[in-house]
Image (cartoon, rainbow, N blue to C red; front, top):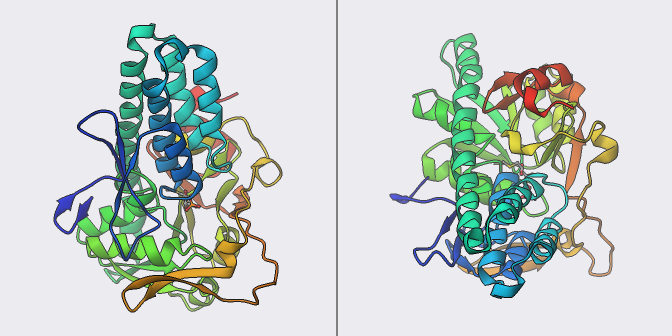
Length: 367
Ligand code: MRU
């Protein structure tokens, strides 16, 4: 995507073909910093500490982690047990986004199947293929989501289309285009007057820090709101459409996404606002049937709730916002049941959030 006139992705292989380059998203929007990942441990730290985040990007980073495992393994230890052990370490870096296991397992399978002399090159190619696939799928999500926005624009006689989104399901969470933002960028690029309500997304403020930043860089009109403002805006007719991303969606249509998504879906249903979830097929978990019961929900450090990062007179600073000795709980995701979801926007088209419709779009994954 375009950042100050430069075309950039969130992850790429360095010219040396030995280093993975990423944008360190912890520093945005105040600093634009590129970080190097050279080892499996670097990749695990980058995923755990959220230098990279967002389901498709986590998947792509994990995929390159398997490549680094093969690349750095002592030649006599590149055997199956070693690679499977490294893949397991990568997969446990974050539990909710199923893309991580999807990306790691795809590259691992390629590597295990390859002859010793080809393991490194096969892993590199396979990780690169995942990156290209996710770029293509996000572009398709934009194409399939655009008619939804065009229809709203027609219903409003060309008036501004107001979309609400939660967290960052933008290109920063993917590689290009984003998932939830792909239809928004497609609409903006086709000349539709579009405005985005951006939930700040406490505690790490992915909305305020990242979604606002990337929409602004693209020139898309947006307004940051507090996480609790969405219901109020919907009651007043100020939201035409909600589009969010997801970290794991069951084959039955239950959607895990950033904590607070469920409350937006409830408010949307109460106010008759369409609530869409945009996702590439890599985010479907084809095994699980009951998302509320079975999707693992990551709990992160209490410090993320108790402290806020920001810029104090041009210097990055961390501020304690509560009594130092108060305990805090940090549930990072929640699950929106399928009954609250108007539909899925995928690379193969739009479908209702029912097992039958999902199966119709992705018959090869049906159990
Ligand atoms: O904790 P994060 O920042 O990784 O959570 C990200 C989200 O919840 C996104 O909405 C989700 O990954 C969709 S990504 C396109």
